[in-house]
Image (cartoon, one colour):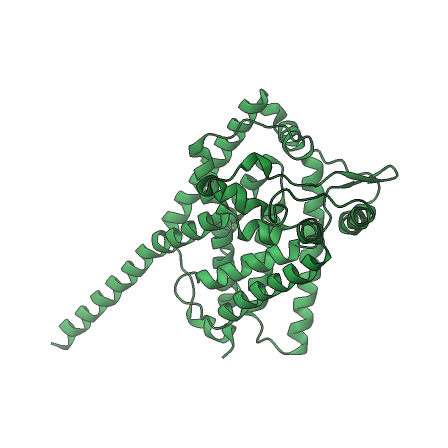
Length: 364
């Protein structure tokens, strides 16, 4: 049966007080993250955006080892990051049912996005949006009328325009100066990967010192200490490139990692494995039915689908699937299923029990 045909009985009604409390937790996390960043950079609140830009430049572009955030801030950021996916699921499932979006849940996702860009990256925020779009299509795939399909297309076009505008604006705020028109920026952002890959293929391929160190880099970094591996030896080869005077960044699609580790045969074998994993999660999710709490399999599928999209830019598919971050997300999602929906379920049970008692008393 169609997944979306079963969603009508599965409105996710989260406890209002818990949502408000979690919004305060997110605000505290955001403030602590900004404070920690400013302390590391030795700057004041008036230079927050500049500090974010310099922090990312130092860590991503210059390879400078920066002081890490305090452990308690890291834990809070993990929780807030995972909540973005979880509440995106809640928003989309409820929207597919009653066409309404609660402002509290929207604020939670928005604060998760803000928290993610404190270190200068916009990737996690884009993951939320892509996961939401996947879930939107998934919950509405039984819409077959032409008019409704056209309306959905126009909605998606509008969302795409708004998303691109916000993407450009956020880039400017974070110090990523955009030269020329927005159309030129869009073309460069979507075309640099192909040019960089072409440049990579024309040069001498770097030799991996360890098995699949480019493709499975996050696995080694996440679990290498447990396996007793020399973590300092696992490095990435992602030089920043130019086409003449035009800066193209260091993204070269997922194929650069495959070719670096396995040669051209890796393009076939690792792409086939990626397709198998994606199809596996899709088939598993397609057999699931939404219930009274977010489904872990469907959440995972939306996460995998977002990573698959990012494969055009870099090796995010294997990097994210093999990192400890995914395990942390799953643990947080399970905890949120228990905490945010436990009181609602108990409350509803008590209401039904009291109603039955009143009816029995009236009949007597």
